[in-house]
Image 1 (tube, one colour):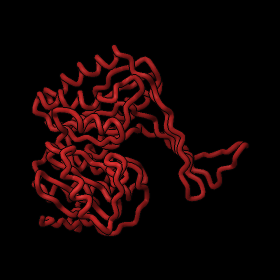
Image 2 (image 1 turned 90 degrees about the vertical axis):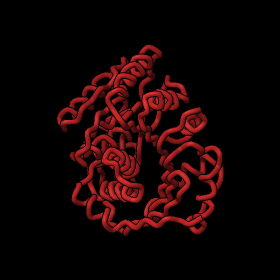
Image 3 (image 1 turned 30 degrees about the horizontal axis):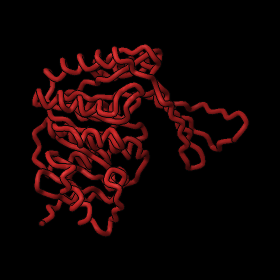
Image 4 (image 1 turned 45 degrees about the vertical axis):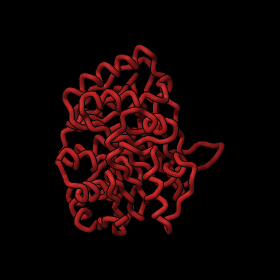
Amino acid sequence: MIVTVTMNPSIDISYPLERLNIDTVNRTSQVTKTAGGKGLNVTRVIHDLGGDVLAAGVLGGFHGAFIAAELKKAGIKQAFTPIKEETRDSIAILHEGNQTEILEAGPTISGEEQCAFLGKFAELLDQTEIVTISGSLAKGLPQDFYQKLVQAAHEKDVKVLVDTSGESLRQVLAGQHKPFLIKPNLEELEALLEQKFSLDHLAEIQTALTQPLFAGIEWIVVSLGKAGAIAKHKEDFYRVTIPTIKVVNPVGSGDSTIAGFAYGVSQAMPPEELLKMCMATGMANAQERRTGHVDPTNVEQHFAKIEIKKIER
């Protein structure tokens, strides 16, 4: 089983408008509300692929109940820890070819609620082989919270795939025990290392991934958008090239990449197939109107067209 962790989920609300008028009333009749958060996107994609997945994290209030109901409706297993404060909304206004977002900070998690989650997480580790950790931390959780989860998983010999950024990622990398995979995009890698990279000099990225900071991480996948990815597996490097596709909705494609990788690991895929699977799911998500969904047939078609080249050192 794969367990996905979402510590700051949201209801993702989309308001499409022909034009956003400022300081007056805007009306729309095409509102969509989705159980959101990066980890829940991962969950849905694994579910679409036919994987055995369970969603964990924290949920509170009426918004939390809505998310739980949506997952139940989709037939997705869940084991969330209840919290007192209300789960947040994330609003996207789609107008004139633009996407204006209003993101709530979300609830504050109490020390008691944190302990309750950690207890439930420890129980789940006895039932799973893979954990994915995605997105931001809710208020009240310490910056090293994800490192605590990595530590707990290491003690149970469970593989952890981490997709976060900023201080949370720094804390994960500073810990004694490392995740099985991290997946920064180029911008996140630049922020982490305080160094600029160019797609014209990919060898510089390759060199950067050999820094002691990344020692002990089995997989590092640096996503490069439409340029594909550079991946490091143990001491081997790979260049991943993807075909051009017609993008419908790119939101959630990074989460879908994590989902594809987790699913591939659960199926014991070899390294090059793992890379094809994770990139194919990211591409397939970008061709769906709904965020965090893939068509398995589309995934298969992309899988066959992705090129993997081992980089000689």
